[in-house]
Image (cartoon, rainbow, N blue to C red; front, side):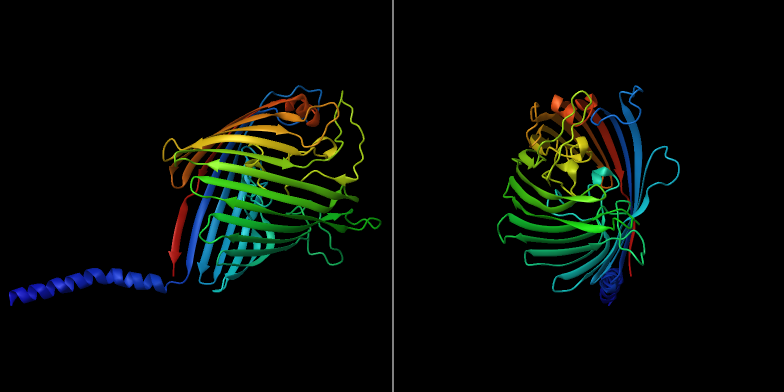
Length: 449
């Protein structure tokens, strides 16, 4: 009898001990709503010398080196339940010592509706990223980063992904006019984009096709004799990624046509293109190698400064390729000022970028890389060699915890006379640039109900 009572008592205790877990599992399955809140703190510092032409009073001797620190704060809020997602990111960026809040904005704010058959619709401010981010990417290294006010609809399933993106921008709630110029949040008036991606089943191959139609506003605001109009340019091409074990081969080709706004009142026909190839080999998880080549077409007869004089050159077409909304620092060296700042008179001689690199993980938390870039223009220059220079990039990152990381880098560039002439100053001939980024991104809380 005592043994029977003991067995019954143990059975009751076991049931009571396991019932909270059982109820918790049932309860978690019944909870349809999930809310997550997190923060992202970025502290970034730079020290640099050379690389860009001097501005301001040329009679004053500038300091040889410039230094600054900046901070970026993001507050991220995510909500989801079956069939619906919502995301918002509030962002502030300012150089240390800046008075007032000069860069507070909603970086992202969107809602996404998803059907069971793979169809979805997303609308709001979105940080777009496609393929290797050469044409469309957040360009996060620029700190403010890129986002777009769009309606995005599409289908995802069975290896096929199709996205259609629509954007229409205004400066204000205009009643009698439909103008949009560069003082807005986006650099374009309208955009229509179709992106298709296919992953081959049971084979390490992905293929993407892209078509964009971007409308830029020309004209002068509130000018009766030069009413605003929209000029359209097109970008179309594709990206291929073949990635068997220990090897990755990438290639892309894009063509640019249509009309570009040339100043505020005129436009010019575009005829440009680019192509790239890249190979990455990873014999082990500890180290790897990469090599590749990029070619971006350039304008013919680019004017070159001699003795401070600037020649006047007429171009019937723009042949300089424009990467539009890509993450430029990923491709043309960390110190990319070929597409972040203008050449003489706004023309571009294009770019050839041949590169090799090595990367590795000395420890589980430490990653290092070293890249060499040979840089040259893509068009003939009168009396000058095509070579722009040689860039050496060293970078290391350390992951202290899952939400704390430190990345630092150093770039040294040896420029040529061609670089000096095209960038309007001897400060472009030799450049040194060091930087670091400390990122702390804690997750504050997650709740379900």
